[in-house]
Image (cartoon, rainbow, N blue to C red):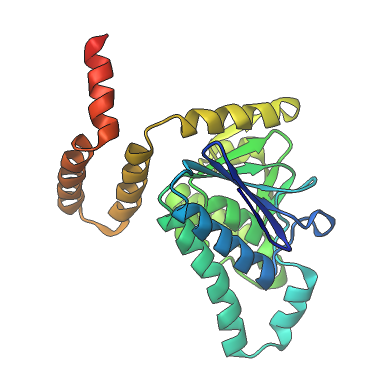
Length: 255
């Protein structure tokens, strides 16, 4: 199944919903329309019962370079309410991704900067090519990656997060891996095949188990230790009753 959008591509087949930022001539820069279309595609993938994994990538050489120039020009002349509405559009996209019932995997080639780095960070898993680069250079123009901080500080240590957002440095994929910002790095010439293999392995896992695990892991963010353990007890019992678990236990016992 494919859906027509102006600034993204969306194709769902064989259990994988592929969302591609499709402004290669603009290095897949973000604007209100692209973010709105991305949000719509994420919602469509959540409603599609055949989807087991969502793969987010960028067309061309870069994943996403951040906000486009037109959007940056509007920032300085927009009213507070206009800027709030623009920021809310992106915030809703982050929340949709966090609440999505399936794992969302970012496949990053080239640059993932500013809002583009935030978009990758909002995914559950980040796979990067060896030559990929990540960074939050907003501070260099007197701006901050305000919304993505909520996600970034859950991905890396507080001190690493502080350094990334206040120095505005662009870091290579290997450094991003070392600090826990991303999950895997693959050689450039093997990247596409490695991503496809990773996605296929994820799609082969129990859809119910992965969905319940994602929901519980993120739901624990604001819980005390005791509350998180109790939530785990409840999901433990629920998972045992799923058809996937029953079949899995039967297969295991027959070995």
